[in-house]
Length: 131
Image (tube, rainbow, N blue to C red; front, top):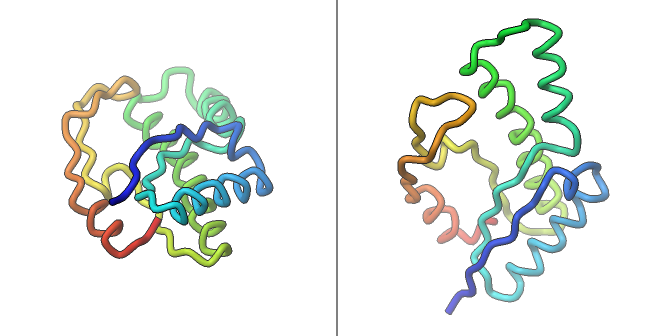
């Protein structure tokens, strides 16, 4: 029997390398206690604000689709670094974007709602005991 649950990992929790390592230790401890672990991680610290500021320097009215694309890079950095930190602790982890795990949203850029999640890819990785 596996334990399930959720813990939100906010940007301040992954604001620097030491904090990322601490989150990785926490995730590994859940895994060691029998939990199946799937994490959704925010961008590092002030990354989102910095990206929005950068966009504002380029355009006073950036296309919303492009803002979404830009904002997603912050989360991609976080998940890759967290997977690396978990690997340093001797566990396999794999990072994904929302699209890679089958999250489908509507077309309302910057305010999109999730329409469906095709969780087969997540289940496949959990069967491989990856975090």
